[in-house]
Image (cartoon, rainbow, N blue to C red; front, top):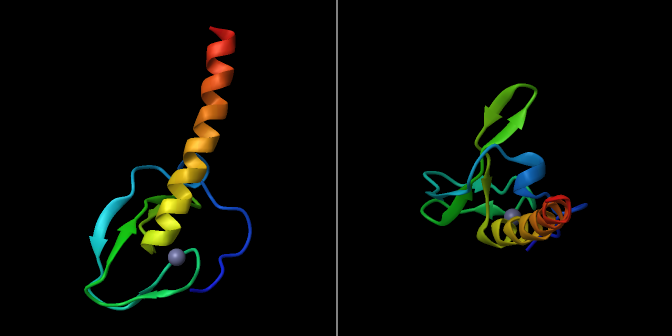
Length: 86
Ligand SMILES: [Zn+2]
């Protein structure tokens, strides 16, 4: 697959919601790696806030897993801050 550029985004940083399982009605490029997800293949829609509008780009399963992992890492950092101040 194509190699995504840059830091893996997390749901905390870019998203306004939860990834939703989605089946592509037509071949659609993954918003992160650009790999085309074929019609009928499963992928995930992740709501993204951009310039005040919410988009619903799709992400291939591999990128979605990476984004969820990154979110866990960032979330544990937030959790540590919260706990140490509690
Ligand atoms: Zn991808």
